[in-house]
Image 1: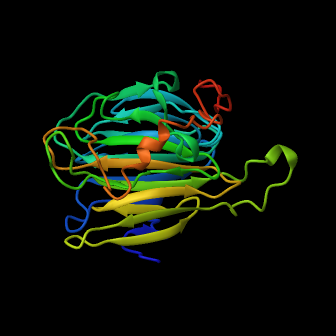
Image 2: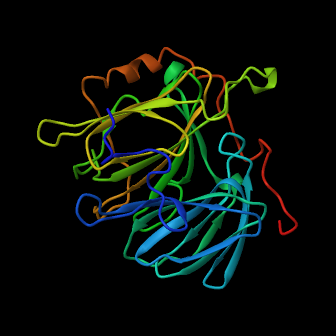
Length: 310
């Protein structure tokens, strides 16, 4: 089902200097945004953060970030499947310039906020890497901007890697109501990338860009939503409400997604409720081992991008 309200295929959300720009419209989307910069070698892009706090997160390549005159150097990485990356948090009401060293792609996950916090660099070595689930529901979570590991006003952001053939965001869950201790109301953006194939060393991969996965979102009778999409590199899915999951990685292709979340609650926390029809699946994990392929990446897994500035 091709729902262009909530599904933005690669290229459809390009605007101005951004290969992707999804921002609040004050009607159906209020809190979160995502922009992706694609820059050539030594190319720069400046912007003002306005009423948003954000991260500068290298997807591919390294860069220098200058925030209100303070400079940070990001080693970055070759791609999202090669290493955990460092990042920079930049506050609201700031002037920022991103300069690519040798060219690359840089995600700017953001959220509207009230407090102005200081800019901060987070090295890759400081990012908690979590292996979540078991069996073919095992996935890797890079908690660079999670609520319990990094201070921000409203923004929550993490990376997830699902190995080829596995399911993640499963059991399906939701976070669209404020229920103290149970659920937090959070909009969410999923940005996807897919590996070129898991057997590259044997030279048996398909054509570049052939990899794919699937993503599901569904609602309740009171708040309907219905999304079932084949996702590829550069695709975006917006989740204003409803149950979401699974995200499914096709055999032969690892699936990556960047999650961006924020909402109106007074407390910044990630609280979810599983779809009760499928919550029982978690009990099966007690009898299963985590997928031995994970963690697929780490801060020490190499392929960081380095330059003379590093």
